[in-house]
Length: 333
Image 1 (cartoon, rainbow, N blue to C red):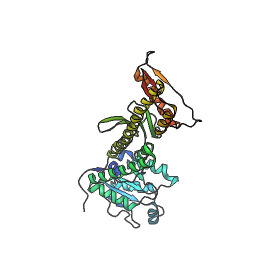
Image 2: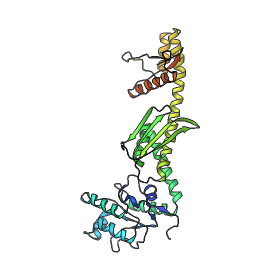
Image 3: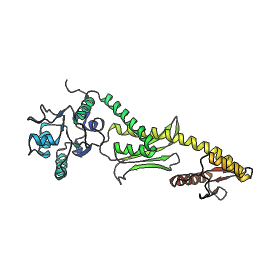
Image 4: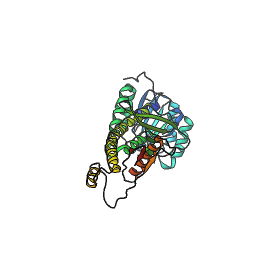
């Protein structure tokens, strides 16, 4: 079988074939190099068999040491560069040589990747070959794997877990806000002033629910990153829509309760029973606060609604609940 003709870059291989958690140590400027095939290190010379220009080399450090105890990664990088290799993927770096190896990769513009612990090099080689001979098929497989992983994260820990899984896959930081721009959840470490900011609308069945904002490093991100982010936005959107439906139901019931309570038409025992059905804690040790927001003093009703929403988020953060409704020109929370 000969290398296929479709141009696949090192960056494509990174995002579509190498396992999640693979780190680019150096040689970032070479990510746009075209990849022709893959060669795996052997225990005998020649170490990579037939190695031609455009090949990605896979190496296990222990096997390289077995072939030649004096073989350094820097020497290997130089030889691969001389042969026109596209990149080098290793299973480990020696702590004392990591900085020097990264500098060598940068100087040669030869991408150097380190696989996550316990990665299977045979599986990595297979996935690289899949990407080379069937790029679109591998793209679909990775997309399906990511969606299943994000859905499992939703089942484990809801929206925060989905965002954490997204950051684990593509790096950077991510923020989810509702349709009013109020924060819902976030994950990842701040990147400071660098990086690229991309916003993905969260909508379900044509209903706008918020935005998922991704702040990712500017290192030649792959096509899968935007696919992962859109999948996360879709999965979060379904959860937001369900939550919004529950909230709208509570609001309709709550408006009725508030109106009857303030009008004095609801008996105490009936009020307690209806609040308990809505899931509100009526323990005597609980503290209850009533807030009335009015537009009569110049505030816009929209601003009052935003304040009520802020109260709702604050209550949820502290394990409380908020019942809010309009009443005679006021927002009562």
